[in-house]
Amino acid sequence: MKDFFKFTLATITGIILTSIVMFVISIIVVFSMLSSTETETVVKKNSIMMLDLNGSLVERTSDNIFKELFDKENSTYGLDDILASIKKAKENDDIKGIYIQATSLNANFASLQEIRDALDDFKKSGKFIVAYSDNYTQGMFYLSSVANKVLLNPKGAIEWRGLASQPLFLKGLLDKLGIEMQVFRVGTYKAAVETFSATEMSPANREQVTAYITSIWNEIITDVAASRKISVDSLNNYANRMLMFYPAEQTVKSGMADTLIYKNDVRDYLKQLVKIDKDDNLAVLGLDEMINVKKNTPKDKSGNIIAVYYAFGEIDGGSSSTDEDGIISNEVIKDLRELKEDKDVKAVVLRVNSPGGSAFGSEQIWEAVCQLKKEKPVIVSMGDYAASGGYYISCAADTIVAEPTTLTGSIGIFGLIPNAKGLTDKLGLSFDVVKTHKFADFGNIMRGMNTDEQTLLQMYINQGYDLFVSRCAEGRKMSKNEIEKIAEGRVWTGEAAKKIGLVDILGGIDKALEIAVKKAKVEGYTVVGYPDRKNVLQELLNSKPGNYIESRMLKSQLGDYYNGFSMLKNLEKADFMQARVPFELNIK
Image 1 (spheres, rainbow, N blue to C red):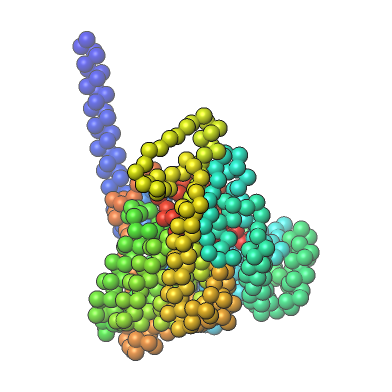
Image 2 (image 1 turned 120 degrees about the horizontal axis):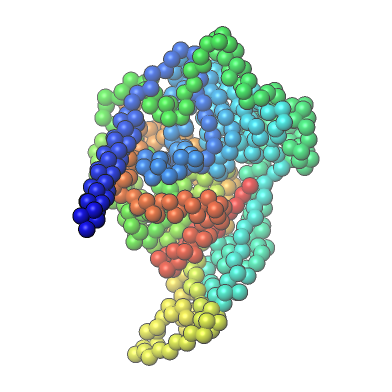
């Protein structure tokens, strides 16, 4: 018995000591992360900036301790950080060039185009850009083609095959399960519902997808043709030949690449360009170091602020918890109100990168944008998507700026209500009901909807669509009839949207800032990003590690189909009336 108490006490003591040690280590890790983000990078002479692109691209990143601890292999880059770093590299005399290590980046073409334009502007400084990859993906080659020299592994290849969109259809699976998706929509081109109600593209959807992937491809080959001095016809021929399956020497002969070189020899190649000896150390600044490089421009003392407010992800209906990703409408409304009331903020650039979401949430944000516009200029800068609900929250702006490859429009509304009677029948479950009024059990998913219920819901959807069209007409200073002709849920590229009046100017966030400054009529100003970026400690307090790990695992396993699965998973929490594009456009 004596030994039992002795061992029990020793075990308890060991657990307590281990817990204390782990707690201390955790505190040290957190504070080391906090301090590392505040350390200014000193740039040595003859340095180069390296864009090591291997991971995922988002609008903005935040310090996430769970990512640091559990997800070190999957890098996430902020588009804002990349653009700011390229600009700082251009202005810093000690940085002689940029090296792009183009591995694989999960990014849409509008974001790639914005980075590419920033790199093209960097070249105007007279500094060099060199790109290397063992095997270029199509997106990475599009980005890298802006470089002065495109290097390729002697046994590598450049993927160049044109674009395709391959949507996933779930109707067959749902039929097997005994679940029917009851669909209510307005808009011939509102194809989001087809994921659940069809087994192939409708003619209208096929028409719009063909139009926008053709428009994106034409933009890609025009840019590549200009940078690589290759004709558009030749680039299309190379795509039809699948040049990637030919020896790498053919790629150089075609003009797609300049030099065949192994990765181990790239550092010596770069040393020659910065004119240092082979035995000297090459100073290389990664993105993390570039973020902490001080800007060359002196600090503005006017007190004037041009705000850039980032709204990216799916739009909720006002009931999401604060640890969820996406556009949390209640938080956005509060933030925009604070920007309206802040006298130092002279103009707002609303950066929208959203496929839409809740129609109700979109309407609330639209109202907040309208109130903000009464006090100061509001310029929208569209990212990869600003479609459906994403366009809804954008249409009230003074000016709308979009990349040519941005996907926008999709002015339409839909609703989905599942009918699980087939599934419950298979399981042998039965239901009955007693009710006081005709619609007392409205929304019961254990049965199909009757005619009266369907009529009510379609009327509700029609009202939502009419409101959406009215908001667009008011914001764009067009008639409802003019908007209806280009609405119907149709998705447009930024280039096409400009021609029909849904977009004002083509360009990126820098163009939007330029317009905002001009409309604000200020000379001195500071650009400030909103909402405040969360640091490690805030993320630790607000994040749920289980949710983070679960979402990362699902995304890595499901890839392009994660969004559709996420919608099914959260169907009971989603608003019935949705203003959004298809769950995954899947353009590759």
